[in-house]
Image (spheres, rainbow, N blue to C red):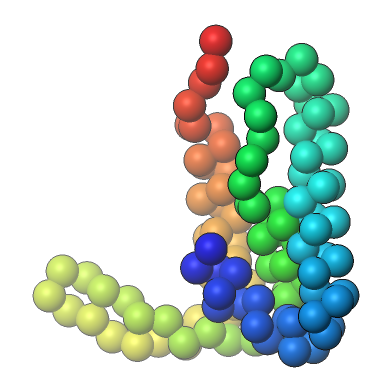
Length: 108
């Protein structure tokens, strides 16, 4: 949800509230459809907003490909503020989602 809070308002300003909501909902429905195609016999419900947030982040990258994000980097007793490309930050988010998806809980 942190990524939605960081990137969502800028995209909503650009798209408008109705198109932003439509993008969010369609992203969630798309991921739900993919889940059903991958595992149609699943008995565990799919709840969450990862697919919807992914749609928002992809929309952000499509509209702002060269954007930079001011980030706080904390290393034990040292911290600094740096500007990083949004693509790099969103790539990190995507990689984390893949890791969580591959190592998440399994249900028997």
